[in-house]
Amino acid sequence: MQSQHLHTKFILHRNLTESEMEQIVLLKKQHWDYTVEDQLRWIESNIQPQDIHLLIYGESRLMAYLNLVHRTVLNAVEKHVLGVGNVCVDKAFRRTGLGAVLMWSANWYLKTHHTVGMLLCKAPLCRFYESVAWEKFEQKACDKQGNVLNENIHLYVYNGAFSTIKLLGDVF
Ligand SMILES: CC(C)(COP(=O)(O)OP(=O)(O)OC[C@H]1O[C@@H](n2cnc3c(N)ncnc32)[C@H](O)[C@@H]1OP(=O)(O)O)[C@@H](O)C(=O)NCCC(=O)NCCS
View 1 (cartoon, rainbow, N blue to C red):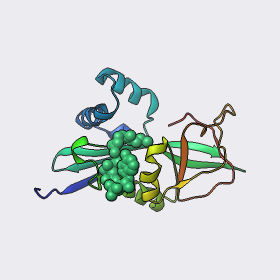
View 2 (spheres, protein in one colour; view 1 turned 45 degrees about the horizontal axis):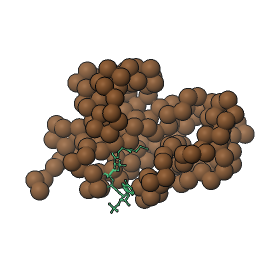
View 3 (cartoon, rainbow, N blue to C red; view 1 turned 45 degrees about the vertical axis):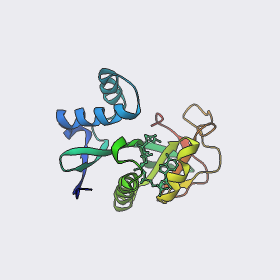
View 4 (cartoon, protein in one colour; view 1 turned 60 degrees about the vertical axis):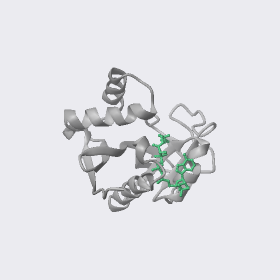
């Protein structure tokens, strides 16, 4: 295999270029079968200017991606967290450890910004997130309407601990 230099980039949504947006949409499209227009519409309505994209390039090709969105959760008091979403790796590079590199990069960001991370995932991916030091929130969490958030999906936390969780913003 040819040697690959990885280049990691954190960028605020408001600073994202059109070409970066295009590469994100094409990578996401490998995994979530929506049209380019639908993908762009989703990003426009769900990602705010101050939210963060994490991009990992090999040479000039986008190989792995996730985003971090600002949210508030209510424990005893309100707390700012970053919700991790759209975690994906180019199909050609899956099971090579790149997903772990991506998640450890996000973990580094959360640690250095003294911020708690949260994510939701389906059962088959629990092993993946546990392999990169995320901890399952075993109690029932609820959304802003009071409905159980983690009934059919698992909630993971990194860099913090909560006794109860009520997510005040939209699910990410
Ligand atoms: C999930 C995903 C990002 C993982 O990336 P990856 O580069 O394949 O993962 P890694 O090679 O770093 O895997 C590290 C470890 O996590 C676990 N793991 C990774 N993917 C897994 C899967 N699909 N099922 C179970 N365990 C998995 C394994 O223990 C793996 O180590 P191993 O290969 O030595 O057994 C990638 O498979 C992907 O893009 N999936 C499609 C999009 C998606 O479903 N995203 C999740 C949204 S919540």
